[in-house]
Image 1 (cartoon, rainbow, N blue to C red):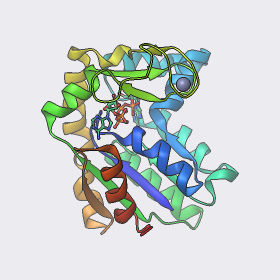
Image 2 (cartoon, rainbow, N blue to C red; image 1 turned 180 degrees about the horizontal axis):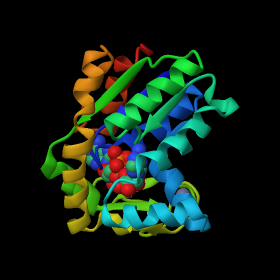
Image 3 (cartoon, rainbow, N blue to C red; image 1 turned 90 degrees about the horizontal axis):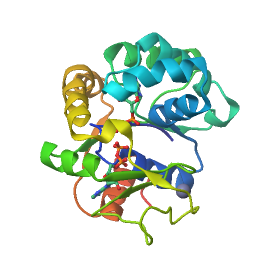
Image 4 (cartoon, rainbow, N blue to C red; image 1 turned 135 degrees about the vertical axis):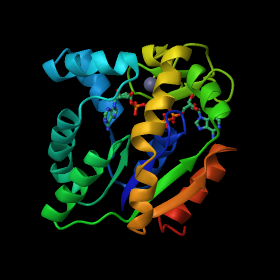
Length: 216
Ligand code: ADP
Ligand code: ADP
Ligand code: ZN
């Protein structure tokens, strides 16, 4: 399983990737999670990245490509992976292709999550994230049993700075300009599989399994 999850912010990539990575026994490589933990740890890379993230802009390609090149080379990624939030530009997609050629690997599918803009706005502004385990909740569609507390680990839930309405609009614009061109890029490679990303989470999960060639 070498799968890329592609879609706008709030499409449900992280929610689905966390479950499916466990089911498939492969690592979930989420660039956003990696950058946020680097920022929380106060590393130079994390602090640089945070300036872009808080504005809703993309972190420079060189930074993210270096990070992913290293991560994809780690032993646990040799048997497969789900990449979530990468690539986000054509330059990143070309860099990913290059890394895969160098390591003799190939992508199995690129799953595109199709979700309307109105739904994305609702999802992002109501999203809450666990500080400890990064599990994702939603105030309305997926609330935790106890307000503000993670069901899975008891950690504290918080709202990401970049999930405020104004920054969300920036991020959706950035997605349209810089990331949406990847749809044609992967369509031309014959890898693109589109999944309707609205509706119950388990129904979407089944559609993704099918799109990824996992018929169970
Ligand atoms: P979402 O899940 O809402 O799409 P992410 O957690 O994937 O958001 O990303 C949060 C922020 O991290 C982005 O707005 C961007 O600043 C930065 N980021 C994450 N992945 C990348 C990437 N591949 N290239 C550039 N910036 C990235
Ligand atoms: P992404 O990683 O693509 O940015 P997330 O997985 O973080 O997206 O999901 C964004 C928000 O939408 C979260 O609050 C999550 O709980 C909620 N969400 C995810 N999938 C669905 C769904 N199928 N229906 C309604 N809300 C959802
Ligand atoms: Zn948690």
